Length: 310
Image 1 (spheres, helix red, strand yellow):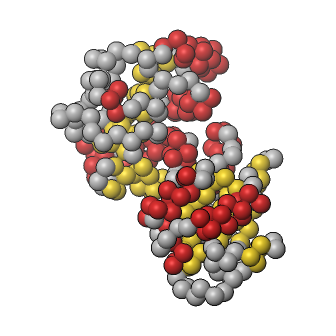
Image 2 (cartoon, rainbow, N blue to C red):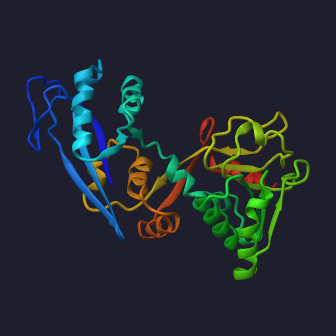
């Protein structure tokens, strides 16, 4: 898999040009920094191409600009793009990329695959222990990844509740966890009682309108892995987590190379082609950590988690 990283170059010089594999990018402009970073895990190889494009080129995105960028992508088999923090503010450029079928990495794949790390962070800030707590998981899709998430949390928590509209879909994992590990899952769709006492909720795929139909513990922590939730009800005074900030060990000079990029998106590029269990293993090697959680108003003060115990 090849991934293109694009950052802004403050250099306003318009006359210089660069040559990449025999291609002159007169329209894209001066590309004076090209790095190929190779990551590999088992049989999966990820190559990251990093280019710098002069700032003035983003003032007006024309057809020739995109034509040359598309040619570069085609020549290198690139469909996934990571934008620098500054370029993530350029709505016209983002629109142009999406219109040309580029996938812009935004960290959502990493968040989806970091449910256990987010939960452990929340439990730690709450000054509690996961093996003493009940966790409720809101999920309708019984995908392989979702099943892995359920299994991993079930192994660590005291009790697990599955809240779903599709009870029959989760009978298989219920049977497997009981027969293989002696873990009992509680599966239901009781809107009045199912979540009424749950302090910790992992929302895998419920949209906001569906969650609002359930009676919630008023001081619960809701960890959203797919859909961002903005409000629940007037009586809810708990914590809604929609995003995270992370840290991990970077190799060699990668910290300098990727300094203009959000490290969450940088890490997502590293794991994008991996399966859940492989992601789990590589995180351990990289000393991956959640360092902050974010809600609708930005970074959540860690003191807020103390309300869970009150």
